[in-house]
Length: 256
Image (cartoon, rainbow, N blue to C red):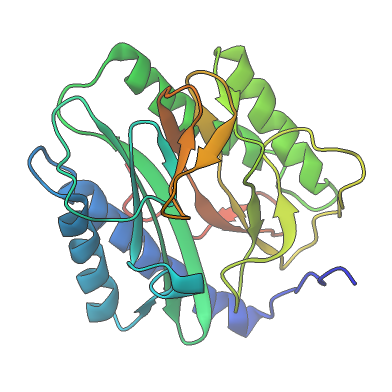
């Protein structure tokens, strides 16, 4: 049986706003830690400490065995990079993906940031990935369907010569990190569920974009997803609320 979509009450939405604000602040802390000479573990530690000091829990830590509070992915790593001893250097791009659980609800966001001076291709990739999110949420309104978001993301990304990952998608969010519905960043197979968007739904829209081909593979660590052709990848995500009008971006605070 398909998992049902949960509509959040005004009280639940207010808690989600608080969880999302903490997640957004943690992303900002992570972004500030992205400097040449830092290890990915040091970036993770900064995020972890901020979430805990804010009265929340790092949702990723221990999730299905994931060993850190933050997914830190570098260059051709798309998502789910495990923080460790790797040192980021001038010219790298670093994706930070994290969740914070506060009073039983989860906020989720991600972004990709440069280390010092990066190539023109890398800068364009990051800009297009971020803007693809905003192109998608133009359709995150009551009456539209989930696929409408993904189609807008795909059209925008491909118009700039990049590609969108098919193997991983956005998702609903609330008491669980991943809830129904799935929110693809592309035109999916018509056999997948394509529900209408309703007021009170909370979802994560998260374009994952490759400079080259969209195909990916998972490394032997069981987590890190990389581009098969070793092209650069970028990731941008926010938790949003479907309202009577424009979508409310719950994790927008501190994002620049």
